[in-house]
Amino acid sequence: MDPVTLAVVRGALEQIADEMDLHLIRAAISPIISETNDCAHGLYDAVSGETIAQGGYGLPQFLANMQWTVQRVIACAGEEGGFQDGDIWIVNDPYLSGTHLNDVVLVSPVFIEGRLFALFANTGHWMDMGGSVPGGWAPSATEIHQEGIIIPPLKLYDRGRYNEALVRLVTANVRMPQQLKGDLAAMINVFAVGRRGLEALIDKYGETTLRECIREMMDRSETQMRSYIAEIPDGTYAVEDWFDNDGVEDRPLKVALAITVEGSDLHFDFTGTAPTARGPMNISDGTTMSMCLVALKHVFPDVPVNGGAFRPTRFTIPPRSILAAEYPSPVGGTTDVVQRVVDVVFGALAQAIPDLVPAAPFGTTGVATVSGRHPDTGAYYVAVYPYPGGYGGSRESDGLVNGTPPGSMAKFMSVEMSEHRYPLRFDHYAIREGSGGAGLHRGGCGSTYGITALGDCVVSILGDRVDHLPPGIRGGGPAAPNDVRFHIGGQDWNPPFRSKAERIALKAGDSVRLSSPGGGGYGNPLERDLEEVARDLNDGLITRESAEATYGVVIGQTASLGDRSRFTLDTEASRQRRQALRSAA
Image 1: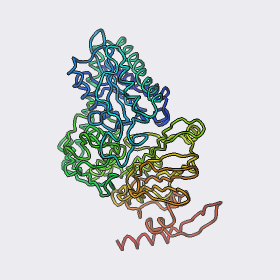
Image 2: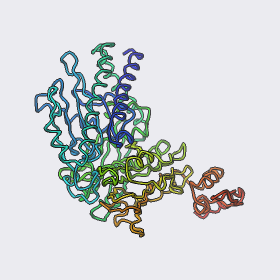
Image 3: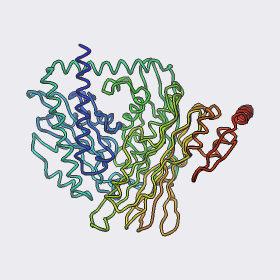
């Protein structure tokens, strides 16, 4: 294959998917897509379902997960005679399509001169799918039907004919039907953008050349991924982590992972993981697999993501475990469970290749939903706020401050837009000082925000990482725990499940404060450069107590600078104190 042609075709396919991302983000009605970018687009092989190309603006967990979804839709379509020109399939069944009911997947075939060439797919988060809790995050749910309406794989369009009855059925069961219809229309229309770009590419290079390029792209991704895996020492690397609780029973849930490296093959074995939770802290097997691949992409970022990059992996996921949910288990905690899969993959690989793997990121999406009727218009609203938090430190650098979840990239809704749309006031939105794990390279800090209600509303929160903190590696310290606090009727209140609360009623003047964890630290904090410790201290990223007790420094001088103090370290005394602490250890 001519390398120039291959590079141009690969770039063009990725550009097509990028354009689809951007068109949906700009056209969507709901802020969860238009502001938070909770969506994804990709092009897939029509026979194998393998990923050919994906957009760079959507959520990584969707991009990997859609491969498994497309493969399952291919099987369903085959039972009904195969794909036809003008078809569009729709599904949100989480046991087939992964994630949770709010994430709706559309699959559209592309025909060239009557021949099925490929499949486009997209995922969009719909703000409400019915269920017992507005927005879908129901911490006390014990079955899927409490979380909303299930859409099995069905034809939304059959040979170009719109299934209006299906749409009426769905909109009759949700709280914001007009918003849903607007987002659905945007998701449907964006396929025209992708089809137009793909047809232009075929006109330029021809179907045969394009197929050869796609095959070569996948083979090269597989070869590159295998080359990196082959550099990992052979062996088995095991780790365990925990969820605080499932929102229904207050007991921890174990996630166990053993990664076995054999040559250029990786085996992810989750044997020993907790059985299906009674509450919503469950995900499907497809989502578990996709998050393993997302974690690998973080470690080996230059491997182009397509089906070839997934080929060196195989999985053992115990049936009816929290990582292989089956009907009727609730799955609303997907947004948090996926983060723990990333954490354990990082934790296992850090034993083998610590120079390439960071410490754990903040590990909880901590979604807060606020819902009610606007006191001025009477219109029903659902506001959704996924957490940003800190990333783990690495051999190269400190962790990212205030980052999106590693598997999600769902951005925090802008404060200005939120206050414009909803009867809420943001009291603060800031970096959470002192929340990163200590280390040679410290973990990034999380965030903290506070919302005061301007009218009656209901708040639900689904998060984790209060009892079991994001761990550090190679001597680095853990991050600060998640923290959720309500202020209702003049009284402070913490939920019994710490970071999980359902349908908490707020009146005007009541508020909620949320603070995400930082990331774990990397390396011994006593080895951190003294100038960096002083900078962190003066920037408010670490506390004086932490600087003295954990980083072993001695404060020389303190000066007042506005509402802050500015510290100067006694360099020689700090070196002596650190030496004493090392000797005592």
